Image (cartoon, rainbow over all chains, first blue to last red; front, top):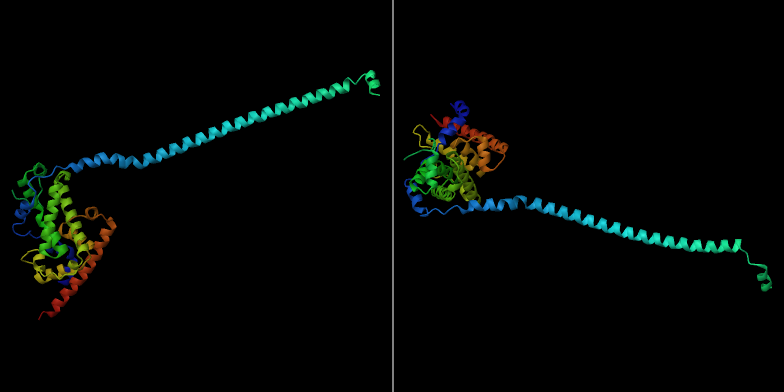
Length: 126
Length: 188
């Protein structure tokens, strides 16, 4: 008998755990406790409105941050390029100025070597 | 109109209840009150608490009728809410979980072939299980729900449900056989 009980334990559980009846008059008491009018289910509309914001809020914020970072990076890179260009032009102008001065000096030196002062000049000097 | 939870319920009844037909709602209540009340009674071990729980479940249903999609969904929803509410109440009132089952004969099914002592022992042992395994066992053996449904109802992994069933069965079977052996030895 014990073995049989062990083997059929699950079947036995199902039989012994069959639902029991609710107390007498349960439905009537419940119906009396119900509100006269069922409130319209307005809550059902809330998720439909709120859901897109909740669903896309975080990705949208991330995308906006990413876009902001990219634009800021582009702006910084552009500024740097302009500054470097300005510095390049200034350096180039300085170099040109230096070359011009050097060229003038060389001209003078060339002039002095190729056209030495005349004898009269020497006499005047002595 | 009288229906039981075992009978297929027309979706039209649900639609009528949704439209505000109180008679249709009462029919839905009558069809499911036994199951909901039994979950409460076997979880909480007290008739008054079980009736309060069943009332609470059906009042919630009345407010949320619009979200119930079909008769099958209604069955699922009622059992899920009843089991979770009972677990919640046990968490708030832990003493009821360890209370002796004074009304154990009523908690068990009223089958004339039943051995009332054995049934009382089974209910006592069931009452000794922790709330979650107890709910799992009731949904499995009282409500005949499959493991996946129980997992969805109690929001737990399928493997946890299987593990609760296996461990609870082993414990109950061992203790019931022990009790039966004692009974047999005591016989003249």
